[in-house]
Image 1 (cartoon, one colour):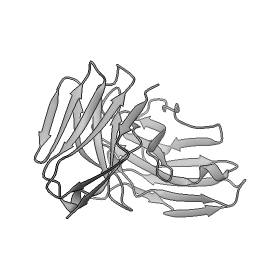
Image 2: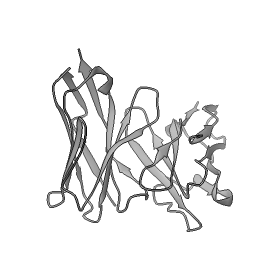
Image 3: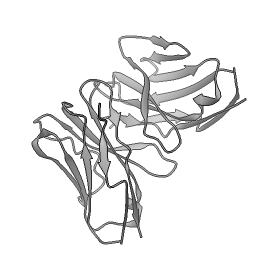
Image 4: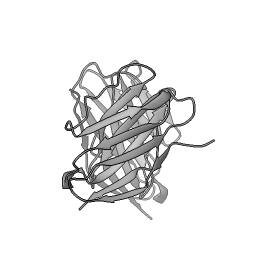
Length: 111
Length: 112
């Protein structure tokens, strides 16, 4: 079946612009996660949605970052007023049990 | 919050040798510990996981051990093959299916 998909695959933006990253989870998965992977670094947790519960936003690095999940399915991660340190691969994952299935990621480059 | 340390950052072995990667965690409430493999340019994939009520779990050439008292867990790969070459990440969470806190990864290179 279809896995987790993300769009766009690559995004180049100028410093100060806003960007939106999209994640389509596996159908039926109630949990959705956003992580960030900088070059040579591990995966940094950003935010986690579980069903209709309030999201766990404890990993968001600043108030420029926000995310929403509409209808318990698609999620959008928004970064406002992008900075060069926001450059990274943004990975989305979904799960219906213990295993998290990752998407291919969006490579964000802030120039 | 939880902090996961992973060592070594790079590991080179000869084909057929064993490889061991170690992780420590800080939050005693963590009880789910997965390991992910990420090949170059690809997404991370789960290879094995262990929960706190088990001390060891094995799946063919891969095994994971957990010491809750010392708050550390390890990945063991036996009879390594070139296709095992990848970045391996350990992670911890309070409950399976919740947010994972990852280590910084170990780049394993297996030479033939």
